[in-house]
Length: 325
Image 1: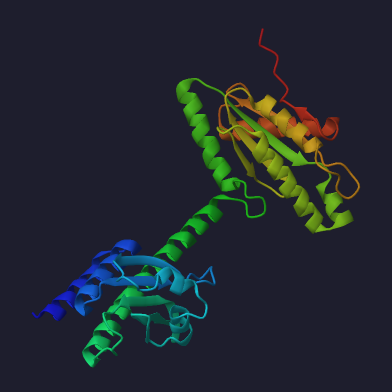
Image 2: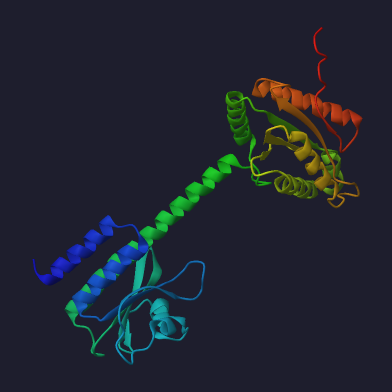
């Protein structure tokens, strides 16, 4: 196998074996530099979130007197920007600049520009053009594969987050609340500890929606959720489990204190539809008020009903049974 074929084989192996952007593109630049006798090579990327081209990876050392590639990339009228716009290779300032493109869905997309320093401004030979094209294609594929992998990972993370959070408030959802409550109860049962469960219900949200519209009601839900998130401890979990209902899982016996802090924070919210924003809340404790998730939730709901019967903005615990004689 001759030298050029060996370098191209190494480039293909690099693309197949490495999914790290810096490592794979850096190695491809080294191989391209060796194949074409270039003392310096760089890749300028077209970031989808930025208008300006940016040098991402470079290998070798520029010759004395050669312009800085960073400056060339930053110049909107420079050769790198021109290569990116026209998608045509060009020479200039001791460099050859080659567009890096991929085709998806029949549409050619630019991902960046490959720049290689040259000893002279002579036009590349046919063989050099072919080698440049091969390395440009491999480099573009490496960049595109990395971006696709990042996109898939971000989308997977987004779906995972959406599966466990309420989209309106960003708090945990009903599914997550039930799982956390079961875990905390199991841990408290093993360790002989306590767990407090608080249930919060926004007073008069239906009337607010009727008076000011659902957009105003959504604003109230988000405001209450923000107070909940800011008021609880790091060990606590807050979730939205219904239209206007929120829950708090608080390990230990501090549930009443944390719930009161939530009510105090909500009392400071601005009025909505001409009325103050308040919540009623009920708190129950494991194991004294319930030995299972179902029993604890029932006890907290009973406490919430007692709070509602007393008036808006009230916090109540479940009625305690008298000890047996």
